Image (cartoon, rainbow, N blue to C red; front, side):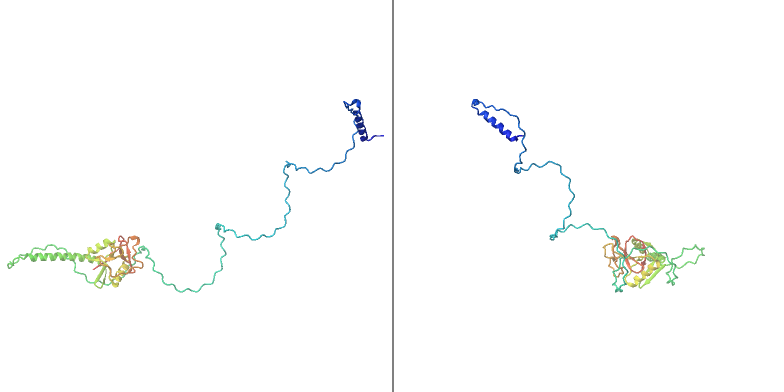
Length: 321
């Protein structure tokens, strides 16, 4: 029969106690080790202990992120926020493509006639046109003055001696000197008339004046000298009739002509050559304008209108008597 391990253990312990309490052995207690007993059965589980403190965080590697969860339901619409500040102006966008051309509208009513515009400035002088055909011969001019004496003829044969004459009165030298002066004046007048006759190929008589030209083209200074050389003066009209006569000359010769006036002394104040202010004028619209500050003399055009021009230009020379 097998003994219960606990019974064996109790018996051993009682034996050891009795041996130690023996009076003979009072001073010393000797324990005698017995034979190890048979291991007992496992004891019952003890009660559950208290929860221990949390351990330090683990040092493991971070796991792989899991897949995204499903989209949650839409939240409620929030209230409208306050307006933000005005942003900076954006850059100008590129031009859009042109639209389709619309259909033509019906013609509008005819507008009222506008008021006449202000005359434009005088245009630049045009190029000289080609010479026109010769005109018909004009009427015969008035009979000219007597020409200068012809050259002295050859000396004739010596005639027979005449009968002696009656003694004359004493010679009066003062009469001789007077006759010589009159002869000299006559010769000068005849020479001047010859020069005038050279210029009278084209002449026009208006009232008390006679305008004439030899077709000479010159600047203003030489034009004045040319007329003075033949005992006349540069032409200038003082009324509409005289201006019309000069206009006809300019048309016939097809060249603008100088007029005897300028503002060389005082800019903008045109006067005759003797310094007196002009009494009659017929300027083009917008003239005189002193273009480029270089126009101090005056021309008459084929329209009869006047224009200020540079005195160094070349124009037709018309003189007057």
